[in-house]
Length: 311
Length: 289
Image (tube, rainbow over all chains, first blue to last red):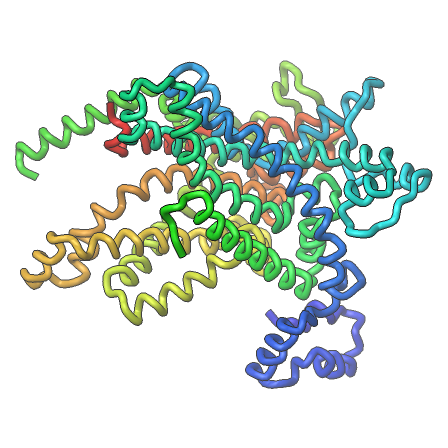
């Protein structure tokens, strides 16, 4: 595909094409273009985002806190639900409750995210609103009308945090309830994964010899589970949840688009539909970079969790 | 196989079947998968395939009734019919993406893992390039460049999917190639391709079965997601994702348009996941008790 395509329309004058080509550096040899690209990559000169009308790096920097807020909320829900469900499922292996939890977990990984998002919007936001019941907001990050009556200054971009330090409880609460539906949507998918990992890792640990030994010593089942089994079972859970968090921070494209949530994912979807290659490229690089960093952090955390591992 | 081996094989199969039957979740999964396979194969005979091309605006966006149990969509087409017709296309996407990906994965992974060295390095670095992209973004980019159609949707998914399989197959071959039976085959001067595909492959493919089954669900989901954001086939080819995507526009007036195709995606994907989950229990000897 010729990259010029994104800059030329039917109305572009033919004599303008070489000028555009020159400005974009497309007249230079391929390897020179690549060297320029690498230099710009390292110096964070990532080009102009046509969809955001600002430099790409600024657009991503401006939108990152929104994505991060959503990712943290979804992550907290996932851990709070997924780990206990998985452990419970393993301890009650093959009982009714285990089957129910397994079905919930498998539903979580089988559900189409756009469908879940729209169904939640319809049933928890639109239907109650039409029937005059209290409803959850279905789009945006906060109510901008409300923000005019309760203005706040943007320090970090994490709106809840910014509002709390300024004592603006109304906006903090409003931002929080705007987070509910998108974070439930995201969390539903990841709860499935975490539950499955927690379950299989707990089952694996409960089969180990040291658990039989602990039981043979006559320790109570509580002590065996919480003091011996749980700590070891949580090591694989940490890896998976770390990678999951990396994935969430990389932006939830479909969820952010449906909930009109102004994060990096939404920007990327706009960029893809209007062929804005600088933004798409920058997002891809940033998402991969975040993923790699989180992966490294998880690896280092390993040594803390499992003293047998040394670097 | 001689007679004794054959009877051993059937004993294994019968044992596996008994394990499957004891696990209610797997039975549920097989029922779901069987149901959708049935719709995919016989759908054209159960309902009228001509409905897909109908444009009947007076009957558009009608709520569920006896005549149209799931309601009608924005073209006035009966949604039950459309969901049934779409089963064929969606399962075809899933089957072809998984089978093409696994073939590429086996070829690439086996060459890489069996020969090792420089070939391995070269092939794996190329695979890494594909793995480094976020799957959805890569698929979106490819589908956008190629344009809307079924074939292009499948191509985009194959490009995303094969690299994971190549990785796993390579790992399998690396661990298998050191085993005594491979050394024995080498001493007998059996050609490499024969060792790779006739001796190692049957041992290396086992763990892939579970992953492939569960990935069937994954492909159905991803394909639906892609066509939901408008990268799927044209509106006149029934497909769950694009049906749902039309429903999103009319969410407030006609929520049933998105509800039922979405439910079909959920159950089809859940079916494959249940089967895959159960297959793992059956294939993993440590779980046999």
